[in-house]
Image (tube, rainbow, N blue to C red):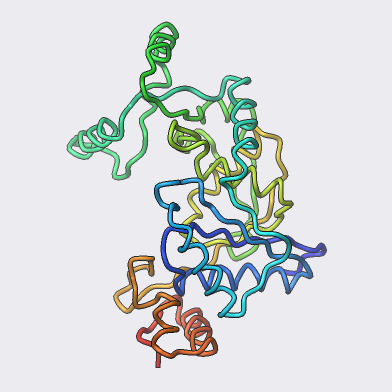
Length: 297
């Protein structure tokens, strides 16, 4: 697809483990799309989860690996941990129009509910929050908040649909124009005590702030795009184009992940592989539908 405007893409890794071949594909694709359409590719570090991003040396190793592989980015690197004020402002806007509600359900309680559904004769085959706290009486909510009962803030997707209807978004690949039905989405968590913003909120706010008009990311995040489109609608943010690329998988068909040390760029470097061999492996995997053959030859 030929775009008639310069694009801004971004690569946004979480510094919670070693950079692997799947990261290289995501970064390369974002850079490629920016170059093809005469634009910029930004680097954003998604480090809001302090528990997963506490080791500063992990980030530095990721940056070193990106430099070694020959991938460069435009402008200054942005860290989400330095953007919490912007996320608080977005939460305030959503709260002001009555779209947020406190959820007092613990993870264990939600897990038990899932298990109960799976045992039911006609239970749903997927896990999602039922919306239990959405309809709690106001006086009970106030009482729980006054007592400091732990809670997360969820967005009421049914009310979102009442406000914005069912807007569309476009994937520039083979998927084309897609329709977002907010009421079909889960009432996702947007913030909790130990996290000033969820991935869903932060990525939408930051893409708009940085002028990202083409979101390039793995197809595993395709299911999150309707949620992001809904948030863009209620926050009156620009709507980017999307490009969801394939994921790299091992010989058994399992998606490459940070736990797969064999595909770590650092380990491949230590084993003597050069950047040309690493990139050749990524390009070969793309041609084979994502199947990555390791060890490299």
